[in-house]
Amino acid sequence: MTDQHDPDRAFFGRRKGKGLRQGQAERIADTLPALRLPEGPIPDLKALFPIPVEAVRLEIGFGGGEHLLARMRESPQIGFIGVEPFINGMAKFLAVIEQEGLRNIRLWDGDAALLLPQLPAGSIDAADLLYPDPWPKRRQRKRRFVSERTLSLLARVLRPGGRFRFASDIDDYVGWTLARLAASPDFDWTDESADDWRQPYPGWVRTRYEAKAVKAGRVPSYLTAHRRAS
Image (tube, rainbow, N blue to C red; front, side, top):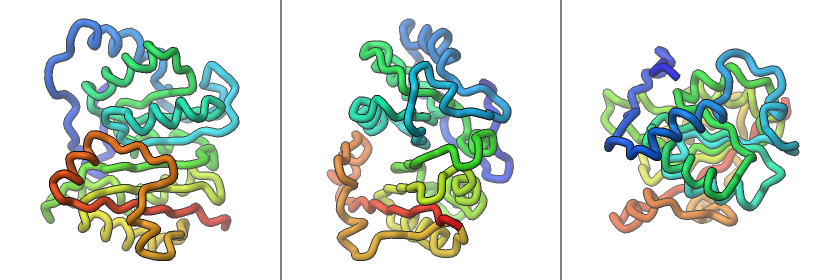
């Protein structure tokens, strides 16, 4: 896949870190193309999985893959789409799914904002955006994934009542997201008390990033919203 990005959102995340080992490079060259979603409009999302799936869920920016892998293992009847532009994280993820023989997965190694318009309307049961790049400086905030436009794109692909989760340890980004969810005509923020967003989601799997954030004294927030029925 080329390094295409959505010019309206200014995608500037890193694509590469340390050099890949031979086995990792081979997986990127050989395994990833077989699992990558096709470019262009997708008429039937479930049909792209090699096994029958009851529903499809999306995780944007899966990082090391700890959360995504746990959900895939516990719900083999669900198809998952994992988005991760960082090639090193993708290579590590591919090694695990090969080792375990997991088949309920399709992948996208580019900007999620380019993928969303290609997915069928109402085709996603749930979407997770967990610890996205916070871009904390004021001049960088246009690079944040959450915006009025991307929430609209997410709303189109989520089924009515479909769930959207956002987790972050950066208070400013949590407030940024809440403000945009509150202004969105497509979502209802369903947390009712402070404990609702301070407590991890049921069955939560702590990622390495979250462990570092907590050790550094930052407090995570776990937001939940649902796609309005009309």
